[in-house]
Length: 140
Image (cartoon, rainbow, N blue to C red; front, side):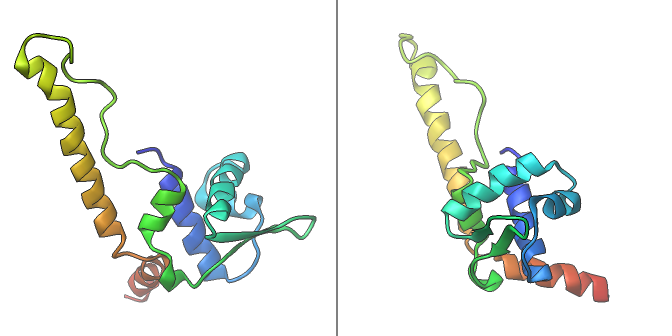
């Protein structure tokens, strides 16, 4: 997983909390990253219908839907996030050894199942729920 998912979730929670149009500079400052990265992530969230974009000197981003209705799985989908993956291929499909030729597809299947398990859990969590958790902790 790359950190675009974390940037996207952070931005959406902050947009929900502030309930106004925020520039990429304002978002980048709160997220502690650079504005170019924020623009790239926000562009993808915009294409998915999770944020609205306003151009011009008063431009920026607003959350497009109620925070309670945006799941973390939607954010992951918008950003093409893969939570469980391997950077290398196990085995060799052309090898006569059944272990070597069968291990790659077997591991891919296991990793796909684990990734789907993450997504299933993220379908149960919302941007609004995270915002509520943050402010509930602050009140404690």
